[in-house]
Amino acid sequence: MGTTNSTLSKIPNVEELMQETGFTPAHIVRLYDRFEALDKEKTGLLRPQDFGAINRLAMNPIGDRIIGAFFSPGQETVDFHSFVRILAHFRPADKKRPKDPSMPEPVNSRTSKLKFAFQLYDQDKDGKISRAELLQVLRSMLEMQVTEEQLESIADRTIQEADLDKDDAISFEEFRKSLEKVNIDHKMSIRFLR
Image: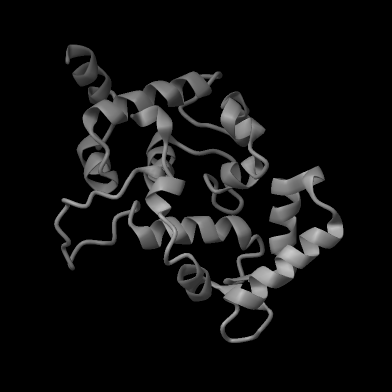
């Protein structure tokens, strides 16, 4: 416990960070240790290349997109608080946490998780997933496993099924609706926090 308190005392506004993200003190300490291990230059900031040390991310076919989600456009570094806020999307939803309409939606809510996943596809940030954007992700994920013709067929079928307003793209609302039966908590979780 002494080590936990010692580490927590190094983190400014840690109570607010825990309240905002729902992480426990033990989780925050684990994340802080992980952040420090990635921060090889000890600047208190991470750059995109620092994430290369995470093997599962480096091997993930859309790892570059996931890493990019940590950085706002034009931003080249991320601090500890931002790091934790992004990772909170991967924390299971707290079903016991009372809903307070005056508070913002938790970052690990189903809607927030879906918005995070949506942005991994919507690379031009126009609020729609185009056929070309979907094909890019499919190529990254399936690489040599299927032919280009099969990839195009998958993309076309996916858009046809999800595109309710028939504009040849998938809006966030259509994305959300198409994933209604998917257990997002299970699909978007962090193993190293357990």
